[in-house]
Length: 207
Image (tube, rainbow, N blue to C red; front, side, top):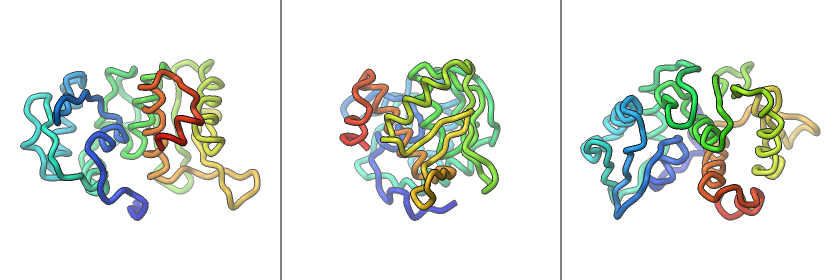
């Protein structure tokens, strides 16, 4: 995967958000108590790969002063994930270890907003789209409108496929780049914690 667009250094809070990890913060500690045991095991494996496993005690991650290299984290996620495309459904029970590396944040925070997903795939081959399937097909128009407004019409969700407007082709779309998926996940999280404020204003302020 191309790595040139990823943040060379990023805060641990933003890193966890972009990867779809639940936490609460208290005086330099990121508490992961709301994550199920299988997600904690997966997070521990990634932390071992990037050299920070000793900072995780039970469900408390004692945040280092150093920023984390996002590229290293993503490579570790890719190395340790299982590669399945479907598992437990719902916000609380999602299995991070089966999530595609760059779409986990999008899927987690979509579920937090009530858009329950069943299958997702960021599209690893050039001929494969970015795919996010909802449990209730009736929610697709609502999610499509939400994604359109949140992204200032840069993303399109239609027939379970998430696409990016291709500025080089009039009326064209393309598969989102990995870093664009991470950015979108971060924006969706911002909506979750701000209880559906005006999405366009949120995007300009937070993304």
